[in-house]
Length: 106
Image 1 (cartoon, rainbow, N blue to C red):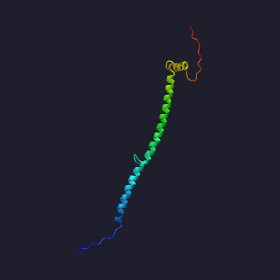
Image 2: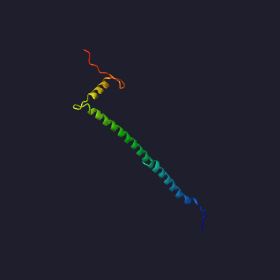
Image 3: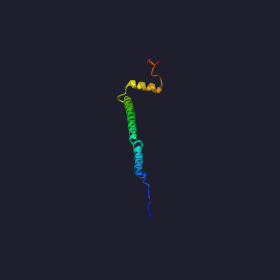
Image 4: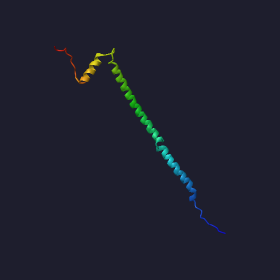
């Protein structure tokens, strides 16, 4: 009769826990640092706040421009606004100059 004698090793008991720990480490790392992980969520939220602030600034600028354009429409035409736009378009005066209006010479 053949008998085999094996030395009892404890390494066989550590294989399954070691492989499980490796898998948990891998997936845990990617759950935090991955493309759709927890850290990316915070980055996306910070980016959303910055973009919302930018959108609010552009919206306020647009409202101001629409208000200024409304002043140039017929029926609500203001002479000061028309004069300001004409001077700016024709480049006749600078913002820091004092303009003195004279009657035209004939």
